[in-house]
Image (cartoon, rainbow, N blue to C red; front, top):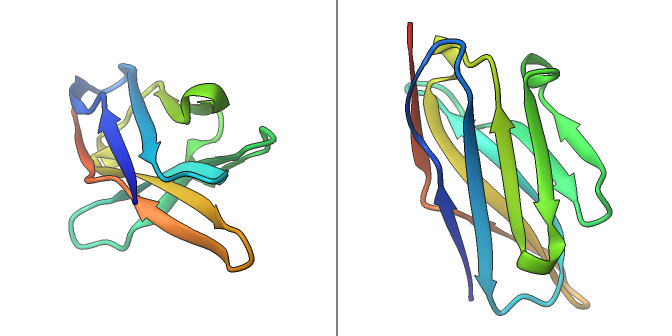
Length: 120
């Protein structure tokens, strides 16, 4: 089994920064990619940012220029630096890891979610 432990959520004022961390542990053969998704009340879960083991990144259009994702492969940890936060960034943020299953493809694992609330 794989566990993802998130940290860094909370309450922040609009315009402020926040940094999320997510550490993966357990039976990990190889992590293909890690990323962050978020889900606001009444909305579907959506991609915020993702990063592959090789360092390629992908961002949602609304986060480009404000958010930055990075990864420490040695620690199986992914970080999300969020700047210039807006009230519409308020959501539960979930860490995701795509773990390789040799010969089978990959499996998705999710963290428990961390609440971020941006006050105006």
